[in-house]
Image (cartoon, rainbow, N blue to C red; front, top):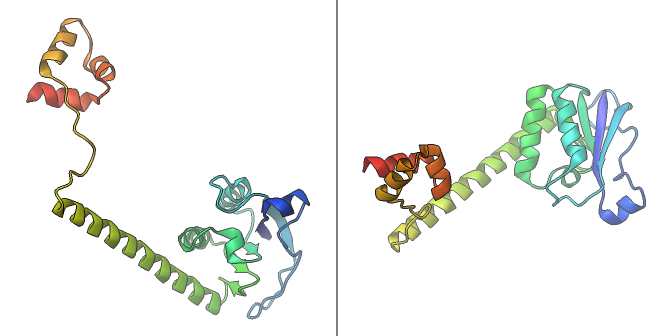
Length: 191
């Protein structure tokens, strides 16, 4: 069983567009054509939106193994970024669900599709490594300039805490009143 996923822009959504999803297709390297689409998942909103109900439903159904493969028209109709695509492909691989992109002619059940997945994984790992390096460099630079990193320190006087304790308040109630954590209250008392 297969399912198809599409995302159409707002203008196409008003016209009832389905994102160009086919009802059947053939891919090089696949012995059996994809002829049976068991379900369609179409988000009729822009890809930059955080909420994509059809994609969320598709991922939930994948976890329940309601289909064996996901068919999309193009990668960019499915995922917002390489890292988003890779996370979804890793999830599909773990669940035994194949992924087929018609425009790019990628099918993760074929050797070429598996190679493409590996290349995408390498690109995403490189992207993550570059981000980590930039963050570390930024933190080193800030420290070198003498900037204080982290949250601002919160100070609560031990005298104020003792005063509230004398009124019969618990540590949790004192923390709520002072708008700090219970741990901060305990640290203030122990110092």
